[in-house]
Length: 139
Image (cartoon, rainbow, N blue to C red):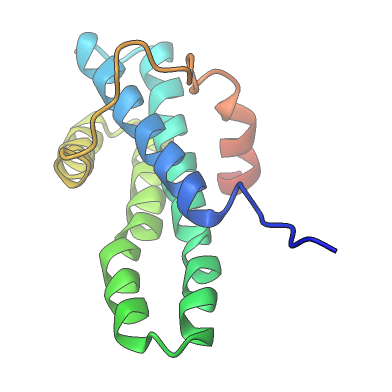
């Protein structure tokens, strides 16, 4: 019997979500005026950040089984901000506080500045349809 490995692990999902956030931020910077498209992009960013946050424990579980405590704590500190900022950006969007959104997006963009996404990426327009997920998470 052969070993079955999970090819869609938390690390790959996190990488994909980071690229989705970068694509959404780039698209958001193209149109400086708040509109419905901007709201969809913000919702996509919030949902992606929340998914990254929810995937932290899955990654840490594997490391902690191998007694990589320092690595797991460093990883947690590196990514724990995502849940907090997902909630902040969702609340700012609900309150139509575009000044706060601009500050939060600037911080998020700085966190993901090292991630490059090709212009010919295969992710399409990932913000389409994230409104329903956003509603499920944030009401």
